[in-house]
Image (tube, rainbow, N blue to C red; front, side):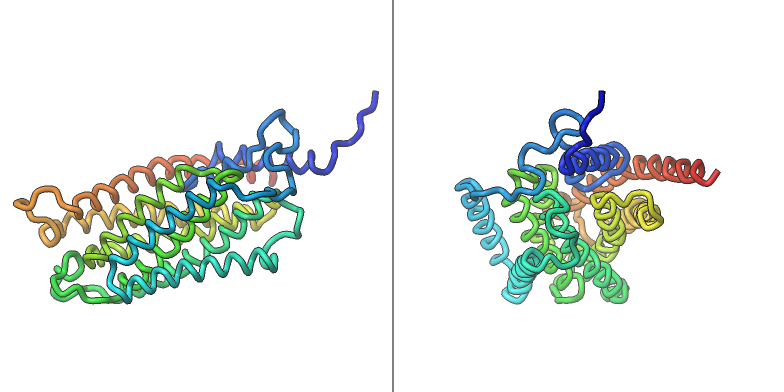
Length: 331
């Protein structure tokens, strides 16, 4: 008995299932975005909602309402900042929105239309913007390091003068991107649902606005922003996997680059940064003041560190498997 070959969309779904399964099982992310590549239903069946290449037809009232409420809340929060800082945050969010619209209308830097599912096309564009944000923060990190050391030293933690400098500039760029991306997540949550990323963004939007408002922890931002060094490699790896190019040298190098930069910045660098935080505790915390907003910021930094350690275990495990598979192929 002979069987007809699978339809192209079913074959594509099978490929995406394999890609997504490995991404979920073997590699960490800062959200559940990789899970979006795992198709529902029987193995090899085409995705059901949305279909492989079909764009959702009608925007829902829930989309409009949730994005409207979130945008209003974010704008109010931004307006609590210094006028110059607020203008930079809003401008950054608008620039990301314009950039996304240009990518969507021109299909620049993306596979041919119809190659990916609608939700993956949207995520591809989102990852382009995330990579640009990461590059900006890496440049900002270098600029912040060049400011060190602060004089007097308290200026790097809780300076009374509240002087505008590179951490303020790039912190505003960072929170402007997060606010845009949070709205993107809300708008696409029906076909691209990612609650963990929303929680992450809300948390760091709150922390960054607090730090910007008081010009706190300028010294900390220098090493924190440098952790974005792993993001371009992560996004390059995702794009190669989503395109079905997992067997080439580029995929291996992007995986290796991600693992090395992740461990170097988010484990080693983060550890050194937290050590510096506590060695300087007398400059930002007073025992008589009780629990303050800066204590909550410090708690958030430690929570992020624990999450990085958890992911680092998976990164090392996946890297070992990658080298093992590569060694077997060359034998």
